[in-house]
Amino acid sequence: SLTFVLKEEDHTLGNSLRHMINKNPEVDFCGYSIPHPSEAKLHMRVQTSRRTTAAEAMKKGMDDLTDLCSVVREAYENELRKGAFEYIKDEVV
Image (cartoon, rainbow, N blue to C red; front, side, top):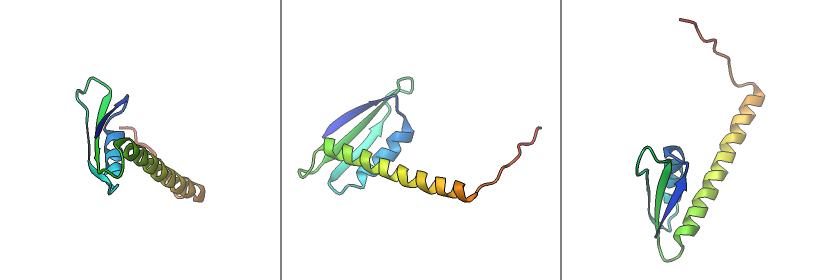
């Protein structure tokens, strides 16, 4: 098991990456914490079976998250090209 310290990251990446890593059946545990709100550090703990390492599981999780983001971005851009959006005029109060 390893604890990775990711600098300048917060819950946005932490929760998404934790979810992707935990989907790997070779991972026994993955969790993260942000030790102090004034420090921009995220601690990601990964424990794995003997069939893989924590570093490999972390890399797979990052690759899987990158792939998922690419799919979401492509779907979003396709909808924009189709004109599947509308403008909402802000009202001045």
